[in-house]
Length: 201
Image (cartoon, rainbow, N blue to C red):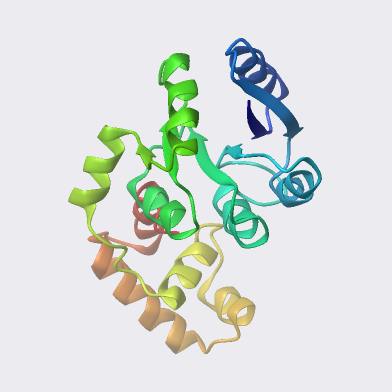
């Protein structure tokens, strides 16, 4: 039996996934959580072979949870299941120890197959997403540029961003200017939106 941990914040979706996977004769759901910050604790208790994580969860996102889980339980194979097919997310996930990245609109039979393939040591990535990630290239933003852009998504002023990140206002303006150029945007709001869509933030 393949022991699976499910992490999905929507109870109905989580229940449906658990029911579908339980119908497979070789898959057993050993833990279910609705928050990203509950993943590691549940995994340490249940010792799953595979963890199936959503990206968008309260507590912490699936990619952050995956990185923590990979550190604490490196033998567990981690698959991300998401509605967000952003190329940048795929790169981040792979750097966090994830072995599979699947979109929620894929047929349910593909999910069970992906779990088995992950158990066999394979990487399992939605082909459309893989192509998009390859054509997109690497994230061009530095960590600081990402921080400044992320802070500006809430509509904060230059002064507020500077205070929040312990930077001078001039430095914030410089980072924003470079980030706007790199994303090909007209202003910082558009740059933040573009970076978010590509999974760069």
